Image 1: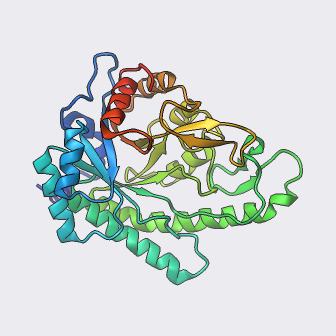
Image 2: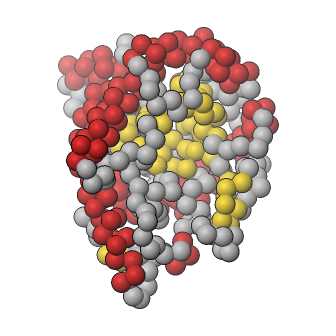
Length: 332
């Protein structure tokens, strides 16, 4: 039974709303070496790849990962079905698709905004054919104006309208352009995502907004407020554990987004206030993140599900070993 058939059957049975598959996914995922006897929460390891051709799927399976997240921008419905079959033969799962790059929901040109929304609609339908339960979405980005350094960033926003009022203590005049661009991007994102919700529900695929380096909603409270504002089971958070560490510890991100998280990315970040972004990305285990603490907080908030590794510097086998240690609470 396809997701669409499942939902239609549910409606026929009088079910007024259906929860996304991500809510129940952890109990029916492929069994490899992801389970452990230390924690109640169950994590599943995935690699990120461009396509799901036979060689890629076999490579991922050989490294004992349970799934893959795809990045290819152009995937037809026919190709999606082939990818799903390839993954199934290898014994892995295409669990998610990345959005087609940086979405331009906040573009000045209305035709560009329309193209971005339509592309995401198609992406949701393609994800269904791939067997994925989520699509990662970066709604847009802003830049090219004065912005505070991460350590000085203290946003004040309206929790209902999400209007950004100020970004630092004291004089905010130097950041007026940033505040205006941020509010415009929020307005356009709200419009776009509300239009996408019915498509996500029809496809049975959750639209997951990621905390990423787009200069928008960069604190846990702000990002969580954005996701919650949609009040929809089909809009979730895709939390990258290594992004925006310069704004708040990973543990704070996890606790603040509790109940909103559909999927996790894992990468490492080395904090250094002397650098432009007050830090830099490094191979997992070589940064400032306390992975033992992060695993305990994942248990605390009750997250079970996929963790896609988004890092370099190691072989597939070495990444699998890192994930094993992380899942067991032994660090990275």
